[in-house]
Length: 202
Image (tube, rainbow, N blue to C red; front, side, top):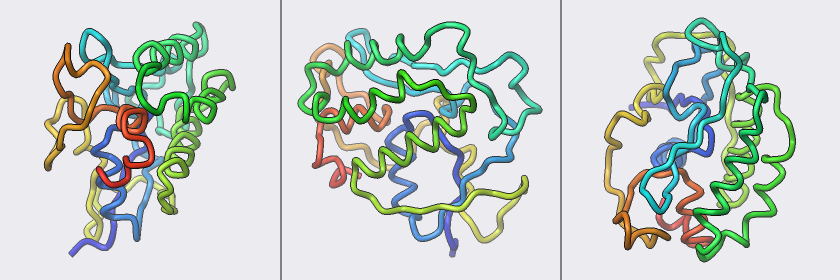
């Protein structure tokens, strides 16, 4: 029997992340000393666009690759990725039922400059938990450990290239008539579509 779970921090995490977070909320450990892996949810979010899935990627400073601790990965602000992400969220979700209800809470993240990806992800997670009215606290790792015998290790299991576990019951999505239901998108897809009822889905 596991005594909790260890998870990474993601950018606007997928629904599966929140399901696992809630299921293990009594004892959550956040990994901050792993080497930064490429092509994961750590710096990307997947939303629904009129043309299907759309990945929003937070650019990182060149060199923030295999041998850089996640907590030390810097965001590259060489181009205005924040404006692109915010415009994409507005374009894709402006007509959703609850976008206007939450946009004032999210908008500051697309004007304030963040130096570190970890800080951006952690503050976004804090906001999202607040919006969902979920009370979860966590501790952070103090060093990298390959194995945690007493904890459910979820550092690699939630990945864009891996099929998520469990059931994902369909809920109304903005472009469902064009794309069909797309499961395990960023949690904001659920939030903008279901609003306060989102917690019941999770």
